[in-house]
Image 1 (spheres, helix red, strand yellow):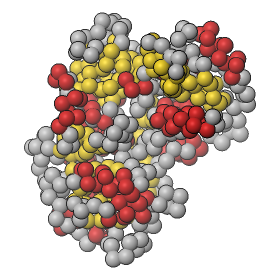
Image 2: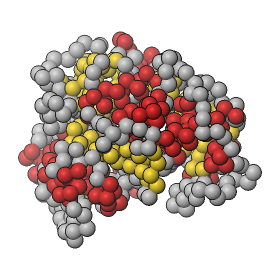
Image 3: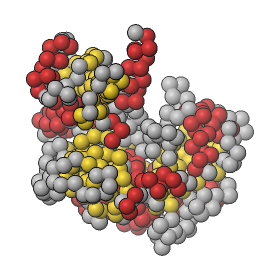
Amino acid sequence: MYNLATILEDNVKEQPDHEAVVFDSMRLSYGQINAMANQVANMLVKLGVSKGDKVALTCPNLPYFPVVWMGILKAGAVMVPLSVLLRPREIAYHLTDSESSTYICFEGTPEMPMGASGWEGFSDTDSCKNFIPIPAVPGSPSFVDGQSTLMELMNAESPEFDTVQCNSDDSAIIIYTSGTTGQPKGAELSHSNLLMNCTVAAKVFQNGPEDKTMLVLPLFHSFGISVIDLTFLTGGTAVLVPRFETEAVLRVFQEEGITTFAGVPTMYWELLNYDNSAGHFDIEKIGNSLRMCVSGGASLPVEVLKGFEEKYKAKILEGYGLSETSPTATFNRPDKERKVGSIGLPIWGVDVKVVDDDMNERPIGEEGEIVIRGHNIMKGYYKRPEANEEAFRGGWFHSGDIGKMDEDGYFYIVDRVKDMIIRGGYNVYPREVEEVMMTHPDISLVAVIGVPSDQHGEEVKAYVVAKAGATPDIAEIRVWCKDQMAAYKYPRMIEVIDALPLGPTGKILKKELRTMDEAARAEA
């Protein structure tokens, strides 16, 4: 029996005064984080939270998040992290679907008043009994009359707590998928899922107490949570940044001497394209500190990878995973050959293969769906037996991603099954088109989608963001694309826009691009 909170408690025994969390001028040691997490655990128990109960949390990248996360674990409860961008109706759905008994919610800011949304969503549920607000200004009263704040409740509790012992397969967290099709589903992950995943990652990345890891990835996302868990497991320091703003991130890089950075492709794109001609930052110093950069969450364009590494002299290792895989499934390893454009090799204890619709393994180099099995696979979607039956066909987890494997066992993501375009009976993979278009001298970023076509079923459309100072000629780009790729692949439709819509984790929201196209067609 064990509890994932051990990753925090072991550091208290070994290095209680070592910095665990840094946020602006606030610097908290492992001993301080542990004491506050114990207060949270005591608070939850007093509120009637028992082992296995669900506790939802809405909070940006602030020290409250890891404190509450560890406190929930210590109480033997299950955390349900919610996006800070959810609206009341969506919050009510998540609280009800997860059967959360308690909801801890940051009140937000004038620009992002998540607290009001959280209170409205909580008020629309029957099962959720406790609402605990976190004021933006510590020590200030609750924005909801009569509600005690997290700090008020914590301050009344002891900094000592006897952590609840759990079985390895007890649930630790329920992370909701993005819900691109139908309602979001909760991926239920166990203590063992999370512990094994960060243990394997620690071996791959060779992290230690001397590492300072920037956490600008949203902590409510599986990628962000995995990084905080890895940092605590290895005794390093997590430097929290609430949101990705290029200059703010570069400033923290420089001032804190960040050694490891985990980000999504759009973050690397922003850092690559930052104009430092005024000399605000010492790019060489930043690069000298960076020991390792990790990219995940979406495919990293090869041109962005090459450009970032040339500018910052810091190597990027690309990996792959999903919320359902805790999240890491494959990675390029520092001790082995890195193949640019590849998502690497399966991590220890995990099997990956590429199959057709009948679960027959595809030959080397041939495309099919990526399926996975191992210690990282979720227990299942919470209360979704039909979805689980579909997801675990043939005893493997079906990722919904189209990929291929080379002769050395390295895997490559071609695209999402749902993003594949079928034009005139031919399969077109948007990522392939995007990679080609990214090499055009006037294009900084591109996203490709399929749009309805009476003639071909679907047509290929590209949304393009221009490089600084460039004025793309759409007709010229179309001709250029025609010369670079097969006739059925190149985009007949090209639209230049100022910026691509991004989700809270920095992913390009192709669903919004499809909505934009539908609206334009309706007006035409």
